[in-house]
Amino acid sequence: MATRKEEARFGRLPFDLFALEKWDTEADPTPEGCKAQWEQLAWDYQRLTLIERWPYYKRPEPEDTPAASEDEAMQILGNNQSPAERNMSLDFCSAWKPVWLRICSDPTLAETYEEMKKSAWVPGGGIPGDCILDDEMLYAFEDGTPDSWRKVLVRMPGLTDFQGARDYSGDDSDIQYSSGQNDEVILAEIEQEEDEDTRFLSKLSVQVQTTVYLLDREAITTGLIKVLWVNEHGQTLWENRVQPSTLTGLSMAQEDSCGLAEIVGYRAVRGALISQRLKFKVKHVHLAKCAVKYMLMTMFRSHRSDTDDE
Image 1 (cartoon, rainbow, N blue to C red):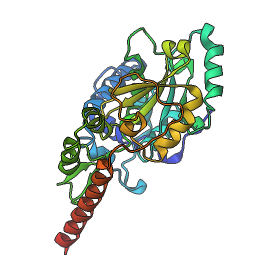
Image 2: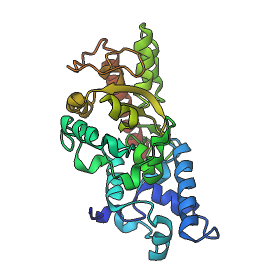
Image 3: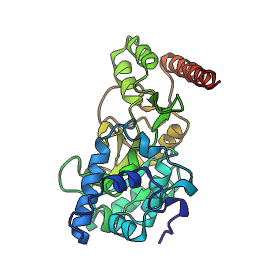
């Protein structure tokens, strides 16, 4: 069993601060009542934009963190998160972490699932052991609906915190998406793209917060892993399929900052199989131009902030 990292203690994650602020101490104090309140807060947190989460995301230094009392921590946290999930949630705030999620616990498919896992080199191959969620006691969410996987957001509300927001002013007056999804320069460049598929996928690319490799009944039965591209609200922006043997290449491409549009080859075919050879050729140079302009804009904002301070 995983041991919780000290820095992942209750009160140190963005959602913890949100829960502490919103927790109704007059509500049902039973384990069932606390679990229901946690779940409601988890969904409320998902409805927030990353900019709205900034006050919670901007974590203070450990010594300045208002520690929750033992009773508060026990009541709020309860059994809603395991130590392993606490550690994972800590990483979601600072690094790209794709998640391997199995929600189908049908024993007749167990052998097929293990074969897919082995073929995908999991753990390993770009999916570390601490990013594998396949405990059937925790993640057997499948109920026949396409969004049943989203129940994992109740256990890990911070799953969509990766890109986060940035304070360009230093005084919270100019909070922007780190991904640039509301940046006028980047969006203007995307709009100039003539190819409709490229334009559409590029708009989605800057909204992606995480990737979920989903193993539901359909995925295990067909032998194809579902690749869900997820936004800040835990909603599936786009969906693809990938053969287990190709997963390592896909994960490596993501680690090298290849986005959705590049990975799918600028083909707007939802649910399409990602190329086995994964040749990520940038079809146009607009993304590179956007990146340069975004970097220059960031430098300008930083310079302006320094000048204002003087």
